Each structure stands twice: as structure tokens, then as C-alpha cells.
Amino acid sequence: MLSRIPIDLGKLDPEDIDREILRAAIIADLDAINLYKQMAATATDEKIQAVLLDVAREEKTHVGEFQALLLQADEEQTEELAHSEEEYGRNYRRITFLFL
Image 1 (cartoon, rainbow, N blue to C red):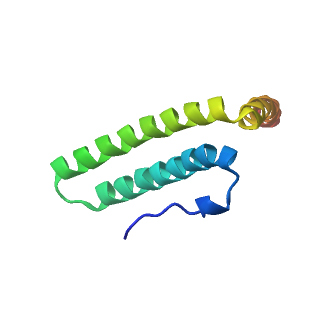
Image 2: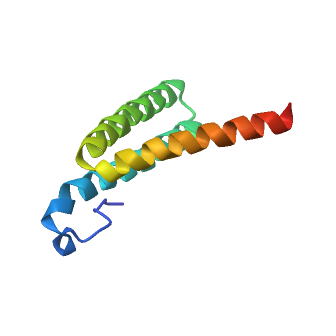
């Protein structure tokens, strides 16, 4: 299985290319996390399991690095993240209240 960027960069406005590359990198690392965790769950050797889980954790760091860059590059993404955090807080309080 070989990877490729899921969009045609040639069809993008030049100003969007870096943002789309960052999004593709985030997708790739999230996919890698899932793959390594699945392989660790299947592996029978504890050393292999440990290394795979460690690599999966490192991929989470990569996701964070790419997301930080994306937030610097995309003002709308930053605004929507702030909006989603506010919305989550409201919904979380509502759900918590329902179960108390």
C-alpha cells in the first residue's frame, strides 16, 4: 500500500496548497495511529507491541505539530476550533446535567 495525497494540488489556488498539505499530513498521521494500534493489538511479541504503541504515540505528536501549523496558516480553522470548544462546553454541561 503506497500513500498519495488525496487531492490534486494542481487544481488548488496557490494560497491553499500549504493548508491542504497540512490537512493531508494530519489525515496520514491519524491513519498511521490507527494502523500501528491495530498491528500492536494483533502482534504476539510484546516487544513489537511496545514499539508499535510507542510509534503510535509519536504520531500523535506529529498530528499536534501539523495542527499547530494549520492553525497559524488558516484563520478560519482557528475561529472554528474556538467555536467548537465553546459549543462542546455548552453541550457537555447540558449532557452532564441530564445525567445528574
